[in-house]
Each structure stands twice: as C-alpha cells, then as structure tokens.
Length: 322
Image 1 (cartoon, rainbow, N blue to C red):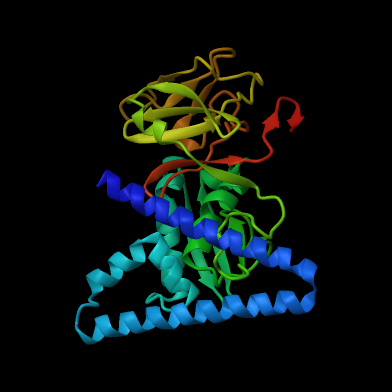
Image 2 (tube, one colour):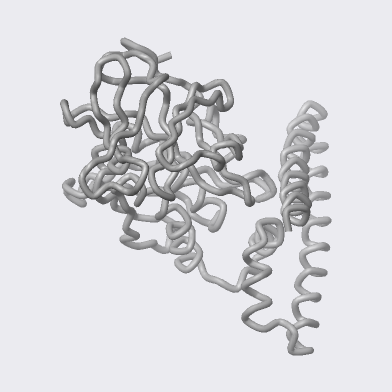
C-alpha cells in the first residue's frame, strides 16, 4: 500500500508540474506576438478537448456495461489526479455545493483540533461561497493564514468554479464579511492554491511526514521549509505552531506539555521554558495568563497521503513582521 501511495503521489506531482509547464510555455510564447500566443492557446484547447472527449467516452462505456456503480465513482473521485481531470472536462458527478461541503469536511478535523469550526452559509449563482468561522478560529490571529492555506486550498481543489469566498466571524454582522478574491485557473491545469498567476501566495504546503512519529506528550522542533516549527502530540492529535512565544518573544525550544483539565492523555498545555506562560494547544494556542495572546498555529493536514504543514511566506519576528 505504501508503494501504491508513492506512485499515486508521483503521478499527481507530475500532473501538476505539467500544468505549470504548459502555463510557462504559453507565457513564453507571448514574446512571439499575439498571433503566436493565440495559436498556442488554441492548440492546448484542442488537445484538452480531444482527451476530454475520450475520457467521457470511457465513462460512457463503463456505464453501459454496469461497471460505473456508486463505489467505482467514489473511488475515481477520491483519486486527486482523476478528480482533477473530471473537473477540467466538466465530468465530475457531484455538483459544486456537494464538492464544497466535502472540502470543508476535509479541513474540519484540523479546525476542530483547535476548538474551531467553519459553517457553509451558501453558494450563489455567481460562484461566491459564504462561510462563517466558529469557535476559536474567528479570534485567532492566524485565521487569515488558516483560510488561505487550508480552507481556500481545499475549496479550490474541489471546486475551481468558485469565484470568491466571503467570510464572517461568529460575532460579526452578516453585512460586513471579508472578501477573499480567487482568480480562475487559466487552463484548470495549474495546481489549485499554488499561487500561480495570483501574485505572491500567503504561504505554501510543505510535506512533514516526520511529525507523524511524535509520541503522546512529546514536543519537538522542526525546520519545515525555512520556518522553525514546534510540534506536539496530545492524545491522538498533532499540533504545529510557529516557534515563537508571543508573551516573551522568545523561542519555545525546550517547551513541555502539561496536563490540563479534561485534556487528552499526554497533556494539553504547552509551557514556555522562558516566561513559564501556558498555551492551550486545543484552542488555537490561547495564552492562559493573557487571553488576548495566541501562539501562531499552522494548518496541518494529510495531502496526497502525506502529513503536510502550511507555512507562511512572510514569517513574523519579534517586534514586527519579516
């Protein structure tokens, strides 16, 4: 099974790399003039339509032979590469609301591990998704990173038809949501959430399979991408934070987990080794001594079968932002 997962992950990476390469080549052809660029785009569209028609024919043959049952469709849609192809060619069996709901379900365990949740308020005919942050998420200083790198990434991967996401916190009035614009994927072959064509991304997903080896109650430091990260396991849940104490502005290296009331085995309070402040890992790292302070939690999800952490491009430092 491990070997099969590696093959699938390699195929998905190859697909994404091909999409990025196509876009790069099209951009390069712009130097040859508008006519050359238009012809190149037309060539890509013709090839994409050809393979799309072939894929549709395959599904039709399977359906006629009774081989395309619900279990088979579910298995096809669960494969990231196949799912992407079905989306590109408009062949996905689920509508946009169903796919957005499934995407939110995929990130709900992460949000729940920090005492938060997200509610789908609706999707209008223009592709605008309206969400409400619940629990600890709405007051967490890293909620914008969580949205950009977890919620938005999941929605875009499942439903590239979405044009924007409107988000409101639990206590905020519905009339003043925050708007996060999402640009359409030019050929729908780019990696969703990669930041291609959208300027500088808020951050990037980095694989971190080593975090899965943490034992209950264990705290350890990791360098993920170029970001120092402190990770810990409380019970069965793993939490990742930027290695920075907001109270003393120092590193959390040497921090330990202590048992909190009703906490899972292994502890629920992370104690800073310098200022002795306590942070509840189950509630987005809120500080018990000063409740307006939080650790900076980083989105932690399984992507393509690999435990991954979303790290910001610009990492705050003591006294400011890098």
